[in-house]
Image 1 (cartoon, rainbow, N blue to C red):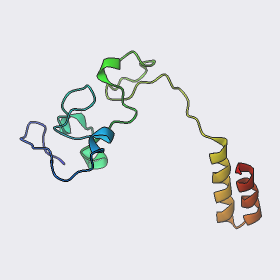
Image 2 (image 1 turned 120 degrees about the horizontal axis):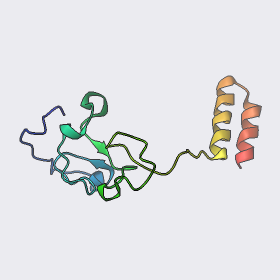
Image 3 (image 1 turned 135 degrees about the horizontal axis):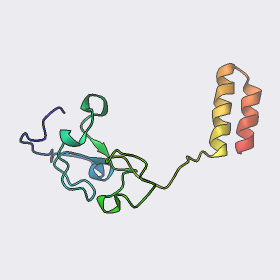
Image 4 (image 1 turned 90 degrees about the horizontal axis):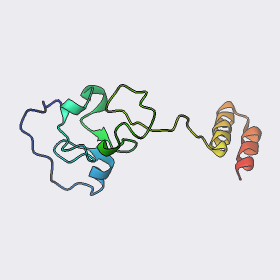
Length: 117
């Protein structure tokens, strides 16, 4: 954390979860097909984001500029053709049930939960 990309660095080779490099980008480890993760140079603000990059929802370099509308001028941002988010109606009902429980109206909450069932 906070080490310049030009500084010497050895990636941790200790007892790590074997899935770690499939879920996040770490310095000194190949990051998708973008090359070896250089560390601080690829991270906008380590104070807020930490020293890692996400891998989920990040496009490979081989798909740069072809996967979406290219509306973003940020080269690190995922580019997709998905212009809307999906939320399951069952999740909305469960959120409403949770709000009813917080409000103390358990019968209304039960009605929402039963709709999901």
